[in-house]
Figure 1 (cartoon, rainbow, N blue to C red):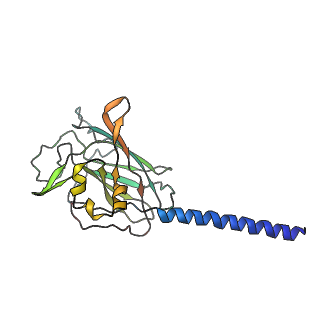
Figure 2: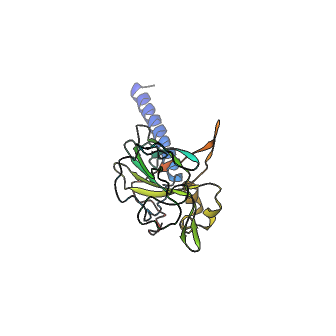
Figure 3: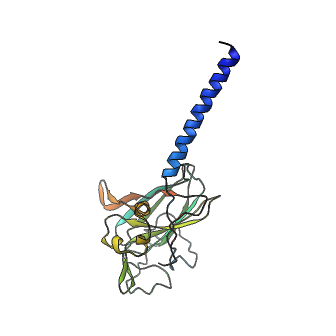
Length: 228
């Protein structure tokens, strides 16, 4: 066979293989939904605090630890095609175990835990991974006929992407089915913001779970009005 024909044949085969790989990648991306947006709510921290690291169970300079079940949260921040996003700022804020936020606007009569940090942040590394240590938040009344289920607010600010604010819920909570905010999402979207937390082997007083976050360059659908 002429060498030029053989070379042309190899290039065609390589091009076909490349197109096949690209098509497969696009198909996978098409099956992936971005993490749906959820309301920020009225209790995002209004003033800075010295301690806002990844361990919310302790406050620097205090000897006490937060009340409640210790929670270990791991996850990644990725694009729609699965690429990790390094350098993304991930923030969480939440109620303490009694269901109250450390925020001047929270009129909940439940006691505030003075040893709970309430707000933490971390920047993802090369693998897009993040981690927090916190406690399982308590449910609380949003109105006389509406109890909000335990949830954690999450905000992601990633270079080159619009910021994303969402909420993380706990699998198996009866209040999930009646929550007005969670019910606004489609069944497929709800699965993306509800995570299973299971006892840590050898340490049954702690639970651990994952929340992998997918951000899109376009605004994610599933946006909801600003309610808590």
